Length: 451
Image (cartoon, rainbow, N blue to C red; front, side, top):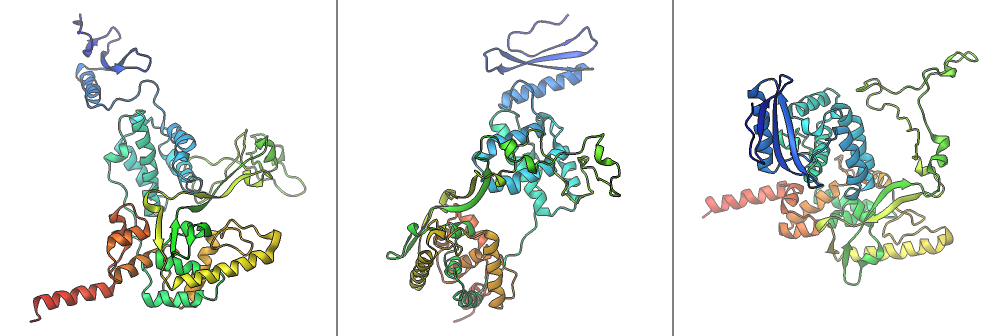
């Protein structure tokens, strides 16, 4: 007969069912009752190992919250619906988080319980992702999304550990960044003079504003007399939401449902065959990762078609040191004054058709510039200026950082201008140009060999 252990001590005994049982006191539940965990095994050695593992978790403070632990699928949906929206923008949720969770994380790991998710499960998952012809950066992005969600689960004591921290993160591709040279930047600005919003690129190349910062800059944050720009806001397209009383009825004509098993339209009619809509099986490879998506029975989506929709363009505050005040280069001030006068004339001519939001750079009716149109204009400028580089809009920011360093500006000042919270980020954004490298080599030559 098993010896009774003192209160709070673990106990191991052989049960009438022919199995060994172990009980471990883990603490106290939310309702004040003792939190005792049970383990069983076929041998005393095995149950002892399980008991010691629980004790180790308890002593290190890594105790799972009592009760049923959610699966990866359940937790990822909880994180997406109720937690991530408080810290991530709607655009990030729609374009990055949700598609990758629904398309990759849930099909690959969704059935595992969070507390039983192990490193080998992630290893197999990343091997499978690699077989789907995904880019390395996409696999790394999936890993970071999963790790972010599990980090929240650990903080809320849903699980004791973030298993993503126990493996090496997938390697991403090193994107070669080629900032424009000073001559190329001047060529771009020479062509930008003929564009309606040409000063937008002058500010991008001189001050390194992010695209969302430049397109969201308003005149009330630009003081041309003092020569300063206050980068206090960004503009982002937020997800539309229904503003009507019955979202389900509002989007009824756009609902898309799979055909029932006994679809009456499956028979031939008028010489044409109806192709039934069916949900794709897990890990379907037929549609190249773009499987048809069906509405839920109580679908409340299709908000963009709602006549009373809410959302669209919204101003959001930058994170950390992204909120900053920068000085305008003196030659740029008269150009901005001329641009403001031209815009005021456009507003007067448009009259009631003007949809202005006080933006420095806008469309012809005063509304925000779409980032895609902004991208197209940048590419057109590169072609017109005969710049032989496939530079992105964000490379204008890299160019600003590099040119500032070439002029001998201290890297901490460059950090302030660009709005980086850490100096290491600024160093990553800058590049050793041939001019700087040649100057360094010449200085070493003079130091070691010149008399």
